[in-house]
Length: 174
Image 1: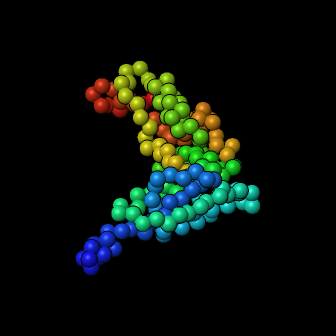
Image 2: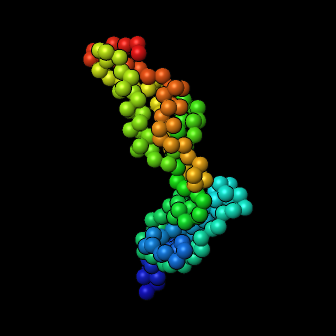
């Protein structure tokens, strides 16, 4: 009997489940991750929308589980921030440490950047790329603050040079 109690206590995990505006999921968080995720979301929302952030209601229920927690603080923060009015998930655009701004639609930006490269290819060029890697990173920001993908593509193409090569890999000046 004592061995069974030791086995159970060694394999049980104290977890919590969280609801955001009454919406529960099956995800289990450690108590520390749940607290960290909630605090991070509150801090981000306050930074993005000072004094205007209306946070959703977050509830937590403690549970014992034979499985370890399967959610992290970033997951919970994302769930909370998705419900904050005035906060949107955006994409920060940068190259070689230079920050250009944010866009709401990364796929559309990538299309515009590819189109800009291929429409400016000189005769004889077979391949085109930007000299610096254009980084598109998910971030949270104020709703409505992002640039349009077309405007961002124009900024990037003016500040990041293009490299064109022929079929043998020789560089062609554009």
